[in-house]
Amino acid sequence: MQATASSRAQGANPHLISAAAWLIPGAGHLLQGRTQKGVVFLIALPLMFAMGLWLDGRLFPFVLAEPLVGLAAFANLGSGVPYLLASAMGLGRGVVTAPSYEYGNAFLIVAGLLNMLVVLDAYDVALGRK
Image 1 (spheres, one colour):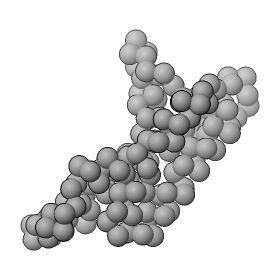
Image 2 (tube, helix red, strand yellow):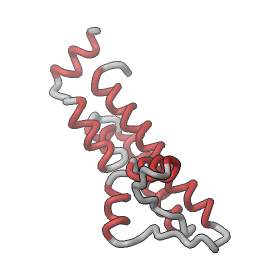
Image 3 (cartoon, helix red, strand yellow):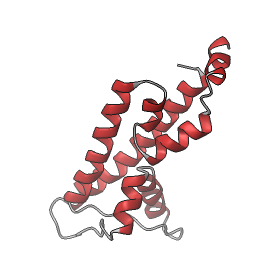
């Protein structure tokens, strides 16, 4: 309980830290002084996302009629700014006939899901749980 009070006393707003961590992978940890973790996430997660695009993966649309497509879209959204930039630039259309299509999808989805876990970790650190 004491760690939570000291984290809040330092001015670490868990909600702002979480928003920064979602937008820019690793930013939540960097803002809290966890430089090594932050740099690893800042490099690895966008690189994984870029690899998914390079492997002809698809950024799935939000289609509620197809639950698995909607879940994949939600996972893609977890990447934050890389997803927003790729969507704005028209990337991630996916080439179904490409031999690497499914691998690309896996990289894109996993990059988003991993960033969601990184956001939760940054949130826990901001609350003083870690």
